[in-house]
Image (cartoon, rainbow, N blue to C red; front, side, top):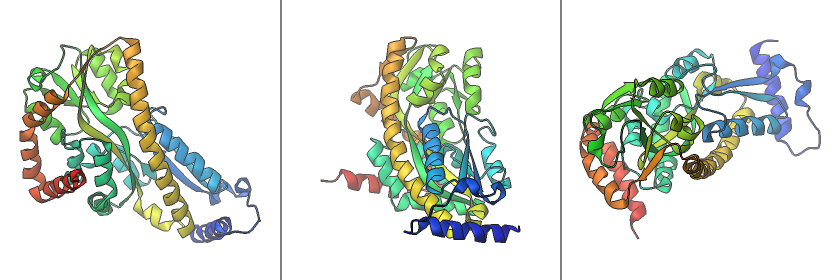
Length: 344
């Protein structure tokens, strides 16, 4: 059966599924070659916010399509590491990925807005930009690389760990080497204070910390906890200095060839899972911080409001670098949008 004929048949089946009749379609009876297979690759553990959301998305899609659409999730870099996913998506080796926004920023510099330290006060302000016209502007940029953005997911705010000494002020970064997930703003935020950086894929971080190639790293609590970084790091500073999120995207050619009913089902399910993912990300980060405290393997220091304000002032040079490379207009638009929400 030709691809066009298979897509026609699938569209007819999906049309029946979306109707209000009582006929039951058993997806298990559809020939495997007539199923829609979506390989979803990501680089973190299954028990992280992204990992759990990917599984939930796959299960809901299978249930709602009666097995006609099968999302196969490959976590923890089983298929591709950081930096390999974009090429894999472009080649069609996978159909869906969810890289960090920092990774997307390597293709589109304005995405570095998510990396700016202390730009966002809380998750509500993050979501305001994500779900508004500025977020749509960023997702629309993906079309230039034959990618379609479906959603933006959370992993919360990042904190600093290291195995050398407590970090209570920005000057304490000097002389240390920190692993970073991408170049650009993430480099600048460390270089500005005399720290060195080492770019590494996420699944290589533990070993680099264990071997001392990097003395520290920045990450969310859920990633610190699930990767057991507290086994190879002595100090954790709850700095909440930067946001970490993910862009869920598909190969655009693949997407455009799907029947309209399939696209609608996938989009509706993704929207539902996105709200669930944001809730579970916040919950897991809170719960797993308490677990890190119980483990008592790493000394934890929490910046107070006054200290965070000082850190924010110290990072002014990083903002200047962003404006120089990405232009001031977009940054100003984001700041203005955030200020509007603070107005009574």
